Amino acid sequence: MTLLSVEGLGIAAGVLPLVEDVSFTISPGERVGLIGASGSGKSLTASAVMGLLPEGLTSVGSVRFADRELLGASERELSRLRGKDIAMVFQEPMSALNPSMRVGRQVAEAMLLHGTRDRRGANAAAVELLERVRLPEPERIARAYPHQLSGGQRQRVVLAIALANDPALLICDEPTTALDVTVQARVLELINEGVRDHGSALLFITHDLAVVATVCERVLVMNEGRIVESGSTRDVLSAPKHEYTARLLEASA
Ligand SMILES: Nc1ncnc2c1ncn2[C@@H]1O[C@H](COP(=O)(O)OP(=O)(O)OP(=O)(O)O)[C@@H](O)[C@H]1O
Image (cartoon, rainbow, N blue to C red; front, side, top):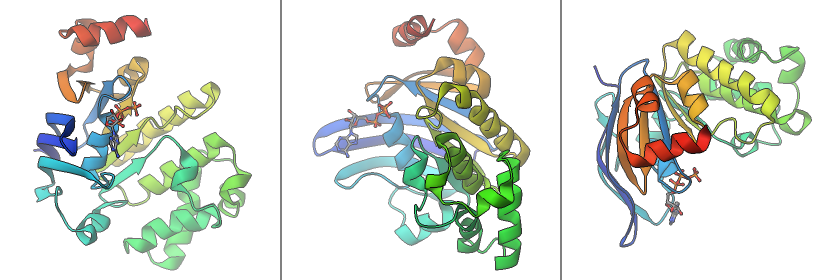
């Protein structure tokens, strides 16, 4: 069974191709890493999956999620999926949070928006979710505003929001890059735990091969807009076939 199927995805800025002929699938519960150098097209690929391509870019090909075509789907249809069936965690937690709303309310809103809980249920579930991402004193944190939290705590809140509706697919784009090294491992562990507990599939974008080795079963390697290698994480990292992957490995050794 396939949860996500990307076929022949191409993204361009006018005549300039940015992503070319990208194809891959993700099965339910599967954890897939997307690696590659800066500018290789990882984020654009993920944006296309969420229907969030920047204005001015065009796309071709197909992105099917649970048998629904997402490329060219209406904003209404996409916003029903986003934050519910497909959730995301980006690099910078502040960009995902509303600075003037208490964080508990923001977690609750994620459930209210999609009608997965009523108001009372959502408020209680929000505190539970904050506890699940191991925020200390979750009731107190729920009443805090984003600026009153540390970067690591904010990213945990974003993760709680992402997990609030039991997404079938979680997309993480460099979720720990902006965090202090001491909290990176912890947030990574929570993402790992979160997707395993929920049986969610994961598309994890990173530069960090060690992270892929810990979290992902399968890995896709992008270079200059194309997938140049894919396979089980163990195979790809122990015996890279593509010269570019070998260079990435050397650089991270
Ligand atoms: N809105 C846009 N208009 C024009 N070009 C863009 C736009 N967004 C991204 N690009 C270009 O597309 C290419 C791929 O960008 P993308 O952000 O997907 O790379 P990436 O692999 O995620 O890099 P990083 O690891 O640095 O985030 C880059 O050359 C980038 O400059």
